Length: 402
Image (cartoon, rainbow, N blue to C red; front, side, top):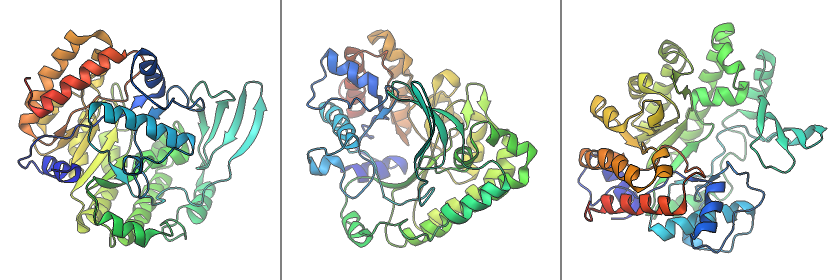
């Protein structure tokens, strides 16, 4: 079976030779450490890539990196090449490819430096977020505010940069891509970060204002989420007339260690109607698998996501109560990806064995599951420990002696 056939069978709970062998990604400093400790490699992680940045394979465009093996031309191309070297080392399956559709702020804001202060600069980025960055990029930026602070900002951003028919949202070579996608053997998806309702509102309003707006200005929050649904329905109604997707990716990141950042009642009022509208559009176009990414303890939201048409949830962080076996028993129709506690990999082989053996055999027998870490592999994991984990997990997936 190829990657596409295998993924669809797994997520349909159909008989399959095995589940996917995928990784969710790696911190850039983890890969730097593994290179020092023996991971064979040709390419180094670029110095411009901040230590907490994610290393993963190419997910956008018509030609995934693994299919071209062209010499990388940019730092981002090098990141894709670095990831592909890890995938090749472990014999992992081809990663998903996202179609190159502009589904968020478009046209982009001009990136400008607003203020300079010693080692740091205050910048507005291409999606309108104002953040403080170190000049040497040795730490992640600190977000200060989004492009929307009030109704006036919202009306302007909506009118200028959140319209579904803005020329350029679909690439000029779209007919060529559509023809290529018809002959694919990999998983094709759409969406991404910040393509969610809470996730989108968070990027517009900022991490604090998004929370208070639910209480202080609920009409504005309804307007934002309703418009995002309207925009995406119009955009993807047009796009999906041309190409058939295997899954759709919605990013929320709306939970923390003690539960959701908003109540289930708020989810039901503000988000659920728009989830139902949007997922109905996707399913009308044959998209059967709709996946949501949220960190933290999302247990109280799983039934609401399911009611809204979501079929896959990930990455399932065990430190925050997201035990994949318990979730699978409680929600037999939901599919899951992730759920392997990354902290165990820093401890050593015995802890890795216990974690894998408690979760993976049950979940592989149950089906509808792709096992990988509950988030990107952090730099406290040695190369030997990660290699042990990945090779044992591959053997369990392939049914070779475990």
